[in-house]
Image (cartoon, rainbow, N blue to C red; front, side):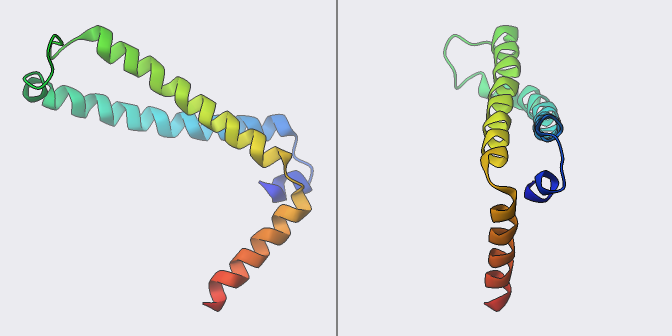
Length: 103
């Protein structure tokens, strides 16, 4: 991200990139999670008191809450990435790369 900022990318472009990547991963993970949850729901129903295996309120609530949390996390990362000085970020990245290769 430092390189993108250093060459003149607009912060809004970087924000869109962060949010798009965060939501893409969340959607794929959510789809896999919902399919998995539905597959084991009958087995899990015996473990929870008062929740049926096909409780739409629970599925819907979690399906709405998880993307909100992912958007918040992506936004925090965006704010942190754009608050850094791009040149210092590039230098720190080069130092870390050198440090990792030396070991």
